[in-house]
Image (cartoon, rainbow, N blue to C red; front, side):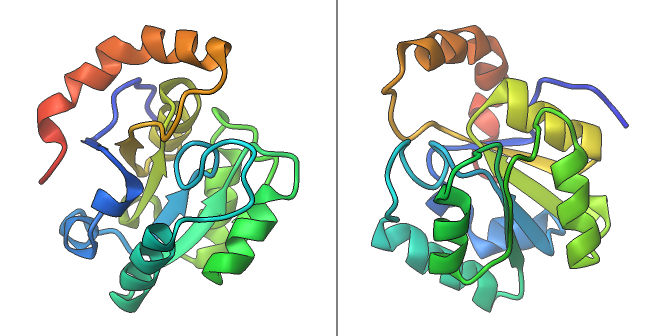
Length: 166
């Protein structure tokens, strides 16, 4: 168990996480955050590009699981749209939800990755759970408090600026 604020890979959007990139990291299970990773806050729809991307990932033999801190209906709605399992109220940065997904999928940490948009929740949870961390740029800034939080994350985001594509 290690504590780090650095992601392993940084990409512009979740759609940039190609099956080839994931397979190159040895990923058999991709754990997805919801808010600002696969959909903007407060929406209950997914863009067609995200649905198509998820189908390509699943077709490559990579399982997908949603692990979200969200307490509402969004994780269930998106999991249903994508045909994947989910965990809500995950408690990130605690690795509890990530470990629960690993156990449910029967995948060891070294063969899993978490894709999320936040350093102080997603990256810490991934690194504590021992899975690859794939930092996705936030989709949309709507909350001034989150914008401030992202500002404080900039040094850690920039650290992986040139590692966006392996």
